[in-house]
Length: 258
Image (cartoon, rainbow, N blue to C red; front, side):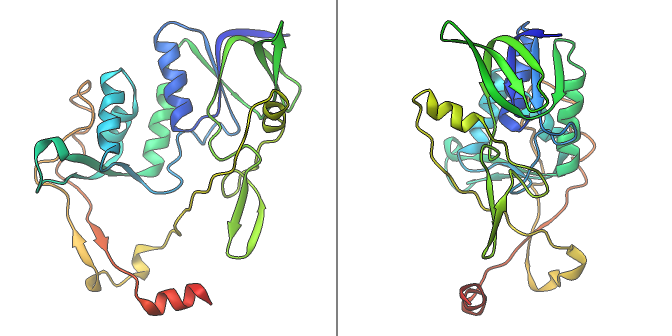
């Protein structure tokens, strides 16, 4: 059986979730295909949303009806308005979030949208009719037709991971990379390139002597990213967690170089 949708979104990261949600909220029937039904909008690199320039973008997404601001407010552990020493035009909101809550909240938004279906699989090829895209085929042989396909695959297309001097295939730690789409894009005359992103290690806070670090507290009057749901963040407003600042030195760099 072949299923048909108005829009198919490939990839359930931050961009894919926003795209699927936006299309569904505008009335389109949407299929979101992701490799794992538990890994939506993961905060793989760091648990922060916003920051200088980026905070303004999150609020612009919110103004356009996007979900990131709402999800951030529902999962915030600490809020700070950066660049306060400068004029208001330079102020930039930033939130540190609970990564698990952030992802779970996004999943709930997607599952509650009656115009949106979710399917777990790898997309391996695009389907065309008269030189126009008409759907996708997955790794298990499933075929889905659509009027439009949105690619939001992040680091997964022919992804490769490096840990020290060791490298291996993978889109993210513990997750496989995706093959087939890059080769098809090249065959269609499109150029592809390889980009790099670094992910810091996770450490147990109980193993760190925080008395030797500079503590950074949240703002006394934290703001919300979203202007739509004024009740979503009340649980954290009076219970922010501190951050800690430290700097490397030459000894650390010697260890890295060796």
